[in-house]
Image (cartoon, rainbow, N blue to C red; front, side, top):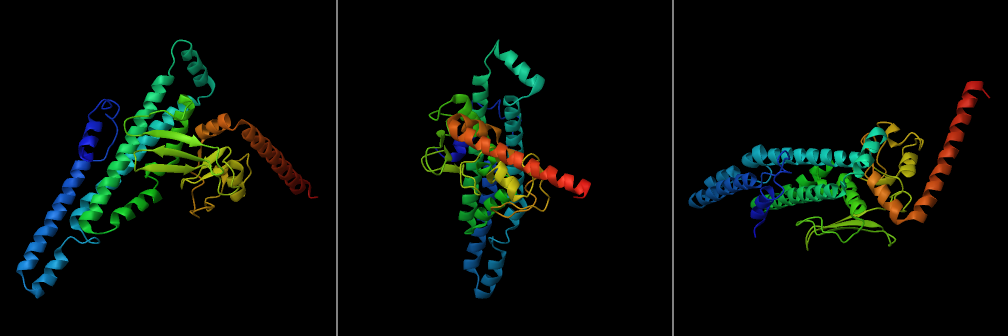
Length: 335
């Protein structure tokens, strides 16, 4: 079955009610843009064969080139970029709402526990996770397919460059920390790595036994994504993990130390000019994401190690607090 048919079936299948207010890739429309672009190039090539060498050089400048394509520059990339941004916004908002409900505090937490006395919402939550995983993977595959077709039509690498731009703009969802949070949420709810989230995602599992802990999402026999759970600073499994705006994962204590801020203040208190320790991108601390689901998963699966790291972090917080108040006392009293 061709991907276009599978994607259409996904949009109009059993999950159509879920996708009613969700954006998606206009795969067929973008293919029509490329088809028109290819027709323009082919017609230009035929005219070129019938002309002399002087006219050929003039006609060659009118062909669809990888750097100056009036059809694709005006329609293809602008539309695809807008669709990718809309999909990312829709996905993140739904995941945020789902996780907020799971880690509710105060009255919301009380009401949630009260509801459990009468009904179990966990199957409904797991079903929504499955639909979100299908939603993000199918749209990501659609973008991957259409960009590959773009490069085939133009004989260029602009499709690959566009994927890199998507990562820079943080709309490439298969590398998003929100997807890691969603996977951790699914594993926390299901309690097993052997689940089948849907007809597109084959398996989502977490391996913490190796020296390089990873979370793996297997989409198909040929598409697998691995997400490292190792802190790039301490080179240990992330503890109390935070994801910066660029997507890199760190322990809270490590990333606070890198930004020269107190652990109790958190990464968001870092100055605007602070850079990511890995990619050196500035301004990423204001968009940090506390990975609560991932931390919950690691706490349940590595209990002894988690307790040890918790003691170390608390000891460091006490040490920092003591040093801070000593400095404040000296500054106030003058000695």
